[in-house]
Length: 373
Image 1 (cartoon, one colour):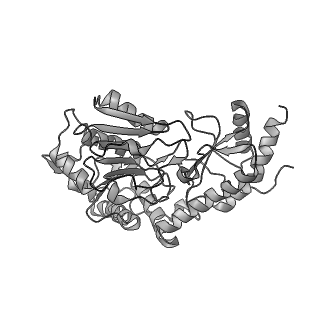
Image 2 (image 1 turned 120 degrees about the vertical axis):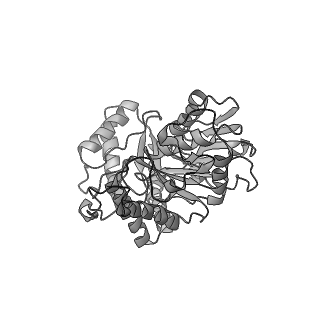
Image 3 (image 1 turned 180 degrees about the vertical axis):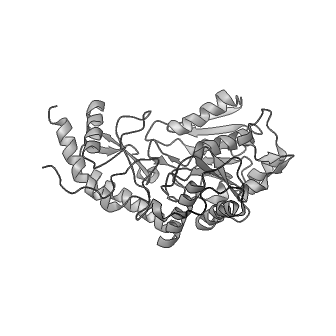
């Protein structure tokens, strides 16, 4: 039977992700519109985004946090172009975004002393292969594969190299060992459901020291420059920005941070994401035709949850289109480079009740697209 109850919000995209419960664009402050980001008001609002980020995430006081252009991609590229080349580099990749960083390191930066450790979609490479004398580049959560790093126990405190971590679909949803991470980047449009185009860069004192001691041999475009004359450009980490930011997007981010604070902080967000994953864990356990792409539950993501189906790629596409047409689930197809399947965003802005409501529709749609087979 075709179900009748639909999710209140059918938005399950993995980026931009669903807005927080109760969100209204009308509630954002309007006084910032038409004002310069370099005005006292503009700088104060941008600085608040930085200080609230540090407070809510529990980032150490001696770490630097800055707002950068071009989303997580821009932030991570900036980090690589500024910091890599001083030491050999070990890279770990198990999905498309991690592979993208490897490509840029080898083909764009043209670094020679690089070791790459990779794994297929749904698997995690052996992180113990990293040589702590080398810099390391890795994603904390593979957004397109649904595979995450379980913890930071494998990162030694006495490492010589820097740890560069793209954590865009992990920050605010997973426990991150800040003392083990020297560079962390993420974007507003993931776990907090913010707007795109801005990235966050978090630097440890070790990373700042590298910026002071090391000058890359290649030229850096303006939007990548965060050091000058052997010193960190501190103003970028105090509310100034390299280029003009969207002030309304910043207000949207501040709104999301206030929501985080109101529901109990990051632990509450992690619980919401874990509860959402649990909805699918119960469903997969009793449904024979759907499987987690990440088979090891220890490394299974609680945000970008990926599935394979006992169905042909064309049948999977038909299922995705059918649920979209019914207004039940939007943007749930697997990433274009990933194996055929589904990907549901289960971050904290998604309600578990909406996931529960979509499950009967999944069963109905699967039966519809496979009944002629």
